[in-house]
Amino acid sequence: MKQALAAPPGEPRDESGPIFREPWEAQAFAMTLALYERGLFTWPEWAEALAVEISAAQTSGDPDLGDTYYRHWLAALEKLVAEKGASSPEELTRYRRACIDTVAG
Amino acid sequence: MERRVRALRTVLAEKGYIDPAALDVLIDTYERKTGPRNGARVVARAWVDAEFRNWLLRDATAAIASLGYTGRQGEHMVALENTASCHNLVVCTLCSCYPWPVLGLPPTWYKSAPYRARAVKDPRGVLADFGIRLPESTEIRVWDSTAEVRYLVIPQRPPGTDTLSEEQLAACVTRDSMIGTGLARPP
Image (cartoon, rainbow over all chains, first blue to last red; front, side):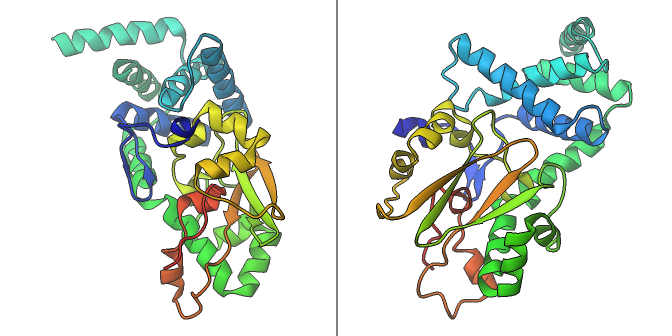
C-alpha cells in the first residue's frame, strides 16, 4: 500500500510535482484539451470514457498504479474521437502504418 | 504509443480538428506556467485576506478566477477549509478528476487504484501512509471529485508565520496540502 501511494520509481518530477514521462503523454493530454475546447465532447463524456477504459484495464489484470494512466487516456481518446465521427479505428490504423513507412523511408 | 499518438494527431490536424502549434502552447502552459504554485497563491491570499477567504469559501470559482487562474477543467471549483476539528481529503474514485488550473497535473499516486479505493474506506490509514497523524477528535471528510466539481483544500496556516509576506506564505503551501494528503509546511 505504502509503495502504491508513493511516487513510483522513474516518474520524472520536479519539486512542484510530476511532469510527463514521455512526449506522447503530453501530446495525448493536450489533444484532449484542444478537442474539448472545440466542443467535440463534454467533460462528463470524457470522464466516462476514461473511467470505462480504466475499469476495463483493471478487469484484465492491470494493477492500475498510475503508471499506465496515459495508455488508458489515449485509448479513451481514440474511442471517443471515433464515436464522435472525427475519425475511425480503420483510419487510425491506416495512419499508424503510414507513420511506419515515413520513419522507415 | 508514440506512433499511435502521432497517427491520431495527424488525422485530427488534417481534418482541422486541432492545430499542432496550439498543442505545443498548451503543453508548455501546463508544464511550466500552471501547477501547484497557482493554488499556493490562492491559499496564501486566503490566509492574509479575510474578505478573500470568505469569497473563496462562498464562490471559489469566481475568487480563483480573480487571480487569473481560470479555464478548462477548473471552472466549477469548491474550496474546503481545514480546521483543528475538520480535515478535508480529496479523491476521484471514478478516474482522476483534478483541478488542473490551480494544481497542474495530478501526481501518479492520485491516479492509482489503491489511493482511489482506500481514501474513501480508510482515510486515516491513507493519511498515515503520507506521514500525517491527526488527533482522533479531528473529523476527516472525504470529497469525491467529478467532471463537474473540483475541490481545493485550504490547509491550516502553520503557527509562527504572522510576520511572513504573502509570497513567503505561498512557499509553505505544498501540492499535497491542497489535496489533503499533506499539511502546509512551517517556513
